[in-house]
Length: 476
Image (cartoon, rainbow, N blue to C red; front, side):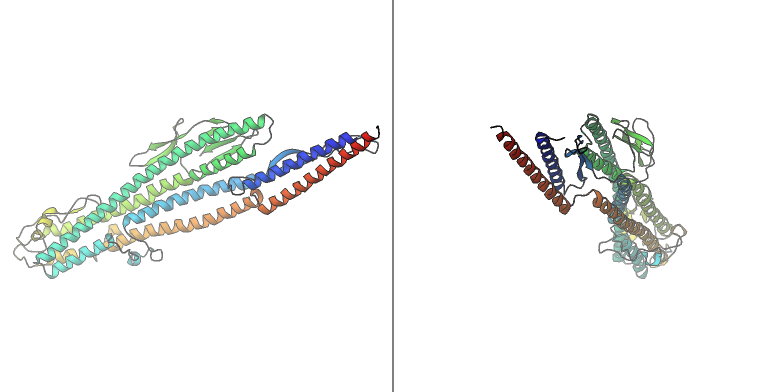
């Protein structure tokens, strides 16, 4: 049975246990604003009983472990949702850049598939939509007064302005592709850095836990934060081993096994400016299915690429159709055969410099002997309302409007998906926080509970001390 010294030892163990409870509650409170932190609890277990005349007698309680309140199922679900959000955010950013490159503010309400209304929502700045409209309007003005040098000069200025606008948009879209490639390289470097950090944390977790120091809760928190950061860049697969270390793979390709970094990622040039990711050691091309990197790749190789191809097709068709009529026309001095536009696509289209320097060479007439004839100018003006099979039987303005609308629809779709995705992710985070997050009220309650228990244990020790004084005084 317990004697006074045994009871004193019981009080001492109780003091130590309550002190540990206060320290853990304080640790939780200190990390209340740390989003990577998972709250902890002291596991208290009854001390081993000792036999006595009246039966086994308790000897108090001991703090036996510090438990981390983590729901691994929610963590795994959240990891996948973070990958999806990373994908959508990267795609949204790329499409917003593409919208800015067009110099065209897209109105979501008017960005429909109907080509007749697709060119609405134009911003205040001068864009391709205005350029196309001005070109054909000035062809019409020249047809009204075919011998006017002023009309010819304005026409060529508008033609050059439109060509310059095509050049600038094409250049911006090319620079955007370059920026997206650089972004992909930056993300791959970040992936490799995170892989190294997770492997190092695996090693630290293992060394801490294998030596009998208990669960390395804070190290596990840091590792989980790194894993979720990695998931935002690319969708990953994780498996936790019995020894506490976590294996990480991307599309079945192992990057981390235990505390070893097995492989890393690198940029792979697949041709035509298409940079993709692959494993460095195994040389395995990766077909990514989520994360920021895949969002960047999809935006670059689908949306931005199609936008660039559509604009090149529009410019090429404009060059061919206008030149076809202009080459057959005649200038004020009877010359013929000159091109109105030079170049083959949006990147190199330009107004014929000879016509710019001498507008009298614009071939607006249908006859070499009739400078006042306007048939060629009128035919070029009518191109503004003509429809063309390569543009899905739409006019130039409608075709461009459809290109703008397609981009607008893609951006609107991504915006809506991202809004929905953020709601899903917030719900999961709220669910995780309700279980793993630090509550100020709850921790203050825990703090007061351990404080009162500590005071009571101190009172017990003080009482036993007085009893010992009484026993000692009996021998005097």
